[in-house]
Length: 214
View (cartoon, rainbow, N blue to C red):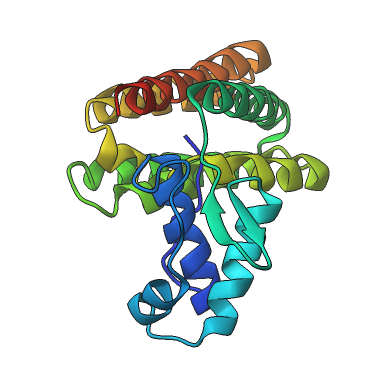
């Protein structure tokens, strides 16, 4: 399941990722007032990058920024999660289908290596980053800049710590990675689409259920 979990980047980028994760997993529930000073202290920075991070989250519909009343978490409902993951699933499925039609031998070899790296990081917090690199290689193999741009946008709704949050998904994800690679290697576009889309939708159902229970 795709998601950029690289911890590098500017303070603003890191603040966006961390705060987005907290909102998506319910750690910052709807209605929470965001303490700008506390976040500034946490990230050891000035107010400017934190304000920019919160403004980006407001564009994503996750927080409400008001000049006088401050910043309030809008949050995300289980329905929002299902909607977001359904959209992401369709895009991911299309990427896998095009990858099956367009992949070259070097990309296929890279996919196998990246899948092995994900498996090698089983049980480790760094598995999420390896998982993203694997899916990103499939996205690139689709050879569509427009689709890649849409995927980057849609994948923001996936918490970076998803596999850590739901360790029970790990083995199933690894098995599906193998199945997906074989479909791509066989140039079976529809099978690749089906596996990839199901991969994402199952993750969405788990996150939606998690939010309902909080």
